[in-house]
Image 1 (tube, chains in turn purple, cyan):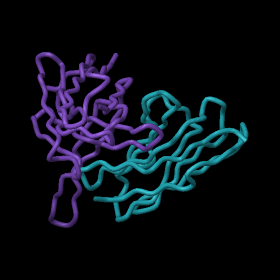
Image 2: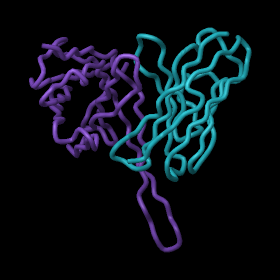
Image 3: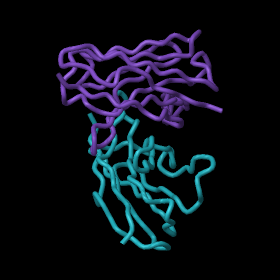
Length: 134
Length: 108
């Protein structure tokens, strides 16, 4: 059974750095195609993807937030850590981590072969609420 | 970044009704689209992947279709357990993943 659990502070002050840990079980980040994403959801608002780390340690970030985000993995501990610097009250949200599967296929167009990737966030943690306030 | 829009933003329906939600991408994303269900106070759940494929264990009353820029999500016969907010999400132009604003489905 695949499970993920987010942990971290419930309250941070403006300008502080937030560190969240995703601890997972039931899969390994060393397995082909495995990734972990972080997603957040401000109260009453839509989902916003933040970052993804691949088994190969490739890292990808939200365009608007990439200067503030760092994602890292510890495969031996089955953990992925997200840090977000310079926290602001607008960062108040529920933060989720999710197992993300990446499947590669090949599209052939004439003489050309192009890799195409499928991504799906198929198992999510329960989320952790972070309030940013002084 | 590719922008995703959804319509309607909310809808009210009765048990047994057919419910349809539309998701539109700001540019061609082929079939690189997933649909998620989020019940109040819960984490999202993947229902449909690659525009039209049902995730394992998801009831067959849920379906998805479309390609390019316009996609449709349908609940064939609404059940009480389907009250939730539904989100589309593209992965064609990654990074980033982008989600639609969501469609809230509740009972009339």
